[in-house]
Length: 81
Image 1 (cartoon, rainbow, N blue to C red):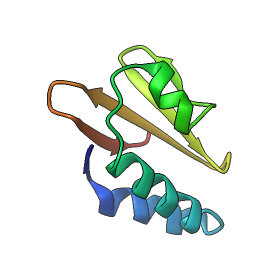
Image 2: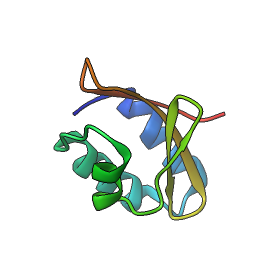
Image 3: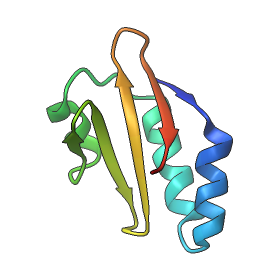
Image 4: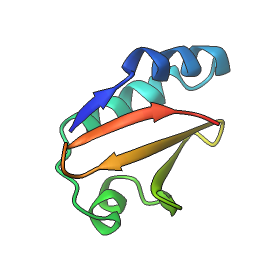
């Protein structure tokens, strides 16, 4: 899985202070993933949810990562609202 905006992910994690390690772990897992559906995502992240056209990951409860899952491109764009 290609992660777009890794620097944004790490900036958000640093701003929240206590979840840098968890964000780095999320990045490593997501980068190597080959997910095709929510069931597969939940094998790695059991609390991931679909909200509209996005998959939402909560890293340590403090850092909500809302990611658009682009299966055709095998990419995740990291952003927060």
